[in-house]
Image (cartoon, rainbow, N blue to C red; front, side, top):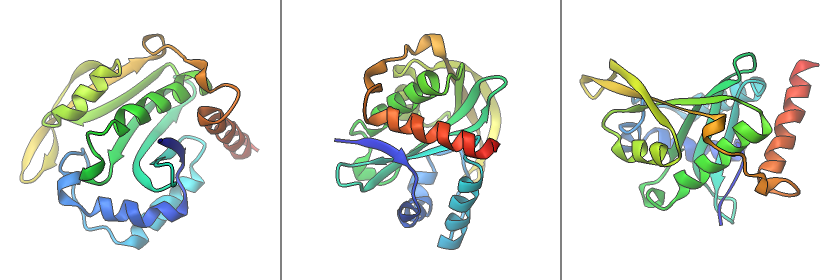
Length: 196
């Protein structure tokens, strides 16, 4: 059984391992960099300071071991939009439904708890597996940014996707206990703390 929970400091060492795997980063829009643990600790601390416009969740197994990371960033409460990012860490955990699960949970949180209207993302043209996941979840291809990212010695295109609230029906399967009800409580508490 999997669940989402807010990212915790104890997750950072595992995330640092993933971010130093060339094969994994090759599938993402970010460039490969050698990242030491201090950089990821600072990244986590920056997140803790910006929780008003970012939601970062660990995808965890029943034993609370982190398997992946899913985030909503650049949350804009005027336009009710956010950017989505997902990363499944180890190759042995990929193609096992983690992405589908996490995407469904985070979209339900974005649309049903946070009342966002639009969630968007960018994915490498070469990452067909991710594109399939997003299309299966209801994301619509909006366009292509040509030669947008420099990866492994060449410029590559990024495919731009979005999904709107009315394209992802809110399923209130979480109201009343666990799951996104907890995420919602965390979110609204953090938002209140950041505005006072």
